Length: 383
Image 1 (cartoon, rainbow, N blue to C red):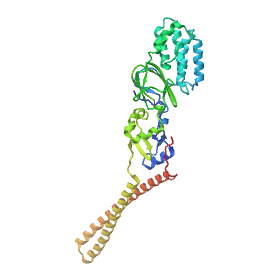
Image 2 (cartoon, helix red, strand yellow; image 1 turned 60 degrees about the horizontal axis):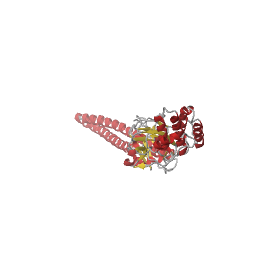
Image 3 (cartoon, rainbow, N blue to C red; image 1 turned 90 degrees about the vertical axis):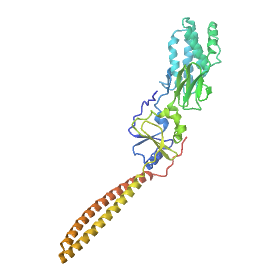
Image 4 (cartoon, rainbow, N blue to C red; image 1 turned 135 degrees about the vertical axis):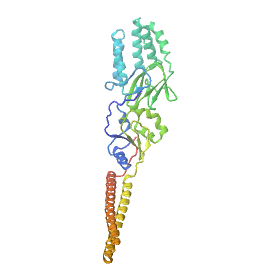
């Protein structure tokens, strides 16, 4: 599946950094990057990229405002009050929509009671046995120790306990990037390697700054680009560490733009549309221009000098030929004079070109010096 960036239309080449934008621009300019750069951190680059998965099934994020635990408690309580009324069947979607909007880790028992109430209502309708079982199993996913509600019909209790205990965690869900503070269904997940083991059903995954409600039915991989911290940019300098993060970011840049990254006072670059990084080592242009210009000036000056000598010698030879009436010597002197003139002109042109090249190098060098004159580079991390 392609990772689509929803809201990023960059006219400039991105410059990723994990510290100060001004310092990053200064260093990039000094290292020979183009001037039209847009500095940003990884979280800023990926802020609008939604979570996505390799497999299929429900995957929803918050589409409204942030929700507090108290507000969710009120929503669940209202649902429980309606639990003997078919009106509750349609209102359950409001509770589900509120889950990814929680600002704090959810209360597993609170959400499990919601599913238990839904299962009880479906059981009472008698024709919804399969859906009642699914709701009871979902209650067990959120709280494996939930007891049967005292106000509910005891006839449904055996079905509830049977389905609650069937919610076993056995399906691996790999989550990228790795997030130490991540919680699933209000508690730390049960890890097996880099995958969380989950039961078949809906699960609420929360991390600092976001949440997603995901339906799990088979082994899958979930990508959370917006959870990638700014500090992850450090891995650019170590290919084997960056590779697991590459698929989170590779499609988040315009395909026709080259990207740059500043890490520990080093500049890295990538080909358009590919965030595989290599250290950026551009040609030292001002120094090479100054050297080339000086060489052209030397050659031009030498050539002009030789031409001037030939012309002076030709004049002397012509004067001697006039005295001796030697026509052959006079003809040779005329040829030397013309050759000296051509060499003088060629030398002057070459020296002028050298002066232009040297001037260009001096201007570029001065511009780079101006870019660095604001102060010393300071690219310390800020996390």
